[in-house]
Length: 287
Image: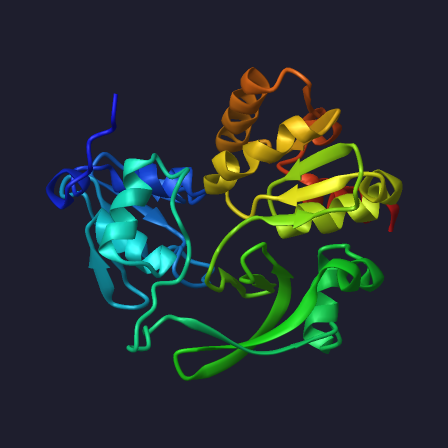
């Protein structure tokens, strides 16, 4: 049966907190009437992003903008209303993240200015805090300088299959358009599926030989699970190493049901949220 097209009127009834949770944004505190999040639109340390559960509306106190769930998806994905409806209609798994072509510069658009080998002292310090050797970070990532609004920033960047970048520094977590997964092909018969940039860097630090002997997919968002499923049958073994939270565990169970040859290896860091938390804990214990 063909899926009915989602209308704007129907989409506005989709629960904002559930959309945020599926995109890995969880409330720092909540009550029956409202929930507060660290803003998904910018970097912050104190939650100032409010969702009214009674009105199903959001407001970001840091930027002074807000709206309904469609407005939120447009802000998060830098997309059109049509693409936002497709995103919501497909339960967050089949959305196209390609940047909408427009002559108008979007206020929060990230513009890449420069790409180079990682060398900035602030980024070297950040990698040290995350317990990632610089040699490993340089193997997979770059130092990316970018403009947002009228300011220039720099971050550790991991490029995806569509040419966009996942961007991380001590104070900033974002991505440039188009957003997609990262596929590292070493022409091996084993595939490892990871969730984020620092899962890759952590695994390469913890088990260099495992990474060298495998092809790697970094999802960069659980929203891309459906798009990477086409690769899994091509491998004799598929190792799943997603986060130890509800979203990660649910995704693993879905993949195990579809692909019996897949292996959930999250037990290797069962006492930790993810691979980087395990790495930081182990490195901290030895110093």
